[in-house]
Amino acid sequence: MGVVAAVTRLIARRLLQSVPLLFVISLLVFALIHAAPGGPVATYLENPNVRPEDIARLRRAMGLDRSLSAQYLAWLWAFVRGDWGYSFADGRPVFLRIVERVPATIELVGLSSIAALLVALCVGVLAGAHRRFDRATTLLAVAGISLPVFWFGLVLQLCFAGWLGWLPSSGRASFDRGDIGDRVAHLVLPITVLAAVFAASWSRYLRRAMREMLAQPFVGAARARGVRARALLLRHALPNALPTFVTVVLLDASIMASGAVVTESIFAWPGVGSLFTESLVKRDYTVLMAFLMCGSVTVMALNLVADIAIHAIDPRTRDTP
Image (cartoon, rainbow, N blue to C red; front, side, top):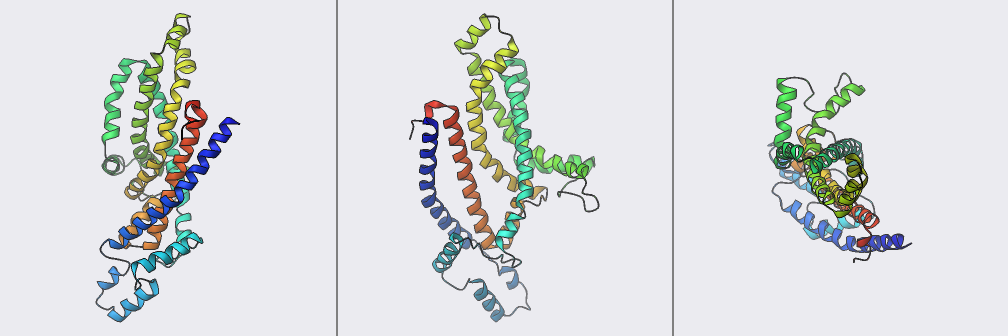
């Protein structure tokens, strides 16, 4: 009951904190989006055949002729009621435009997370136990952490899609195929880009935690009793190193979701990230606001999951405010 009560208090406290925080985020984001040069009618202004009265009528239809405060209050009231509005670009409901892109993003982020976890676990455990392996992987880990995602993705496109022609350069499936093999081939490059950065970071955290656990007296006592090296790693050191590792992974989950925006844009992956870049170019205010608010809620939810996992794994945190 102690764990359940602590988790319940944590959830209630986070929910109370999230409401004013989301309000402030929405206010700042709304102001910044509308302060950017251009707007939804910017493309029409470049057309000499569009008359000024047509632009004025279009602005009235979009609600852009009202003051910024009136636009914000109207959007906030509609958003709270579940009405996300309609896209300025194609007139479709914003909710449908986002929902239809979610499966592709979940597929990419989910598989990338699994790949990054598997690599980080293997490399982190071996690097923490064997110094030679650690020295060999340190350079790769530092390179993976330092490489910009967009640059790494472009390099992989040039090498494996352009020069070698082994893999498709963009999209989720080919127009003339779409079977499992074709879908897997389209996943290889974006998963490699997204997983490499996080696997490099996570493996270093696990390597350091493994080093600290292997230096603990209880591990030395187990070694003195004749416990085999594999058992020392998997039964004694790794379970005690996992809380730190799990905390880092869960906190980075929101960062991976945001990193998918760049990856999806590079590989033309039809997910939520590419929708964001398209809407940003077109200044599609309603889609941008809905995307950013959903992103904020996702980050808060993942941080809450991380806090709950920490409370469940580490009893020392249950009495902290």
